[in-house]
Image (cartoon, rainbow, N blue to C red; front, top):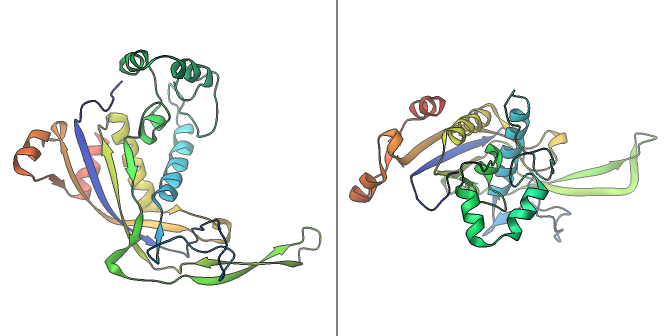
Length: 260
């Protein structure tokens, strides 16, 4: 099992995504203006990294469950007593957490310990994530203010608007560009393969945030750049430390490398 005690590689993807529909990422706390305000930082709307990460993980889980893998991957919040994945099996996890630090270290470094690719990539209570996704901010310093949309509750018997069930929420209109970064550290072959799927799914389009049944939340990856150090890809850590310069790859070259 590869842990984080030695830093062997790091890939930084600086990504640009475009909203093909309106977006709603709610704060969960009503404001004087609307029942469901759009999340902001310093007054500017943003897409939290947690929202992007959740959408990416959900898509990957569904895809991997559809593949004929020798060992099935875990699904978030699901306990599988038949699983050999340490964080995915509550009994195994309980024994691990009740052991001392030295025993836990030996377990994680053992070749017999299995942690499924999803838990290795996105992390668990056992080990931190290899893939980190930052907040997406509006590109180019542009400021866009969300608009307030109205909604009503529908009576299931009459299929008409129910009295006294009006509500509203903020929507960031379509056509916005956002920038964010993804970081992959100590990526193993399975992690690189999953990152390839993530990139391709984002290029095709992915739904993020709330109100998706209303047609909101569609974003697409329009471009990205890659900076890295990785001895297996011809640019070792020592070269970066000596020069202060990271290796770079064009998107097409990077995707070919991920497929190897």
